[in-house]
Image (cartoon, rainbow, N blue to C red; front, side):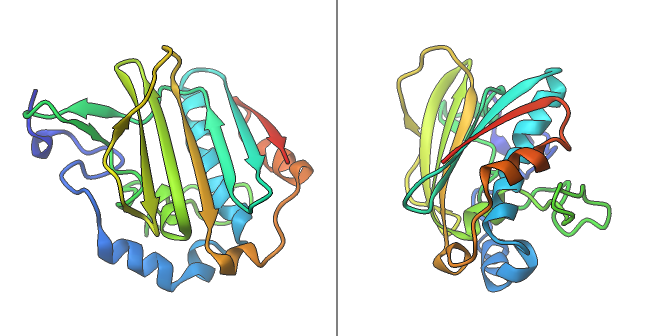
Length: 203
């Protein structure tokens, strides 16, 4: 086991836990970072499921539009990278509370199926009143809760049945919920841009 400061950064900076300035920047500019509201937030999350599906030559994702305005996105990928540090503590890659090094402010960022640039999961977390990230890996399973992108709990171990994948349930800020939500047919059509991913939508 090594200290997190020595871990290689690929998509996020392991040495950082929460980038408050980054989250505040997103919250101050919702029209820029979620240009078509909830639809964009959903696609930001589904894009990670699509990454996993492409890596594994196929994958499945389920989107649920809940009656309270929240959204759940569940996939069957590997789960978010979670490691033990030199003190034996579980550390999850900080995908919710720090910038995605591949996309955020990058001029050549991937374009999502709605025609807007991909910027990363921190956009979803920062623009949600609440978000719960449930993460199942081969080495364990945990849940963590966020408010406006800031973690308000640590990694909480949960029962693990051996299956892997992630579930992100988020409640977008009221200003975003006031706009029309995407339909199941629309989300299914947009997801055809990811040929390795099978998407089902409920609600």
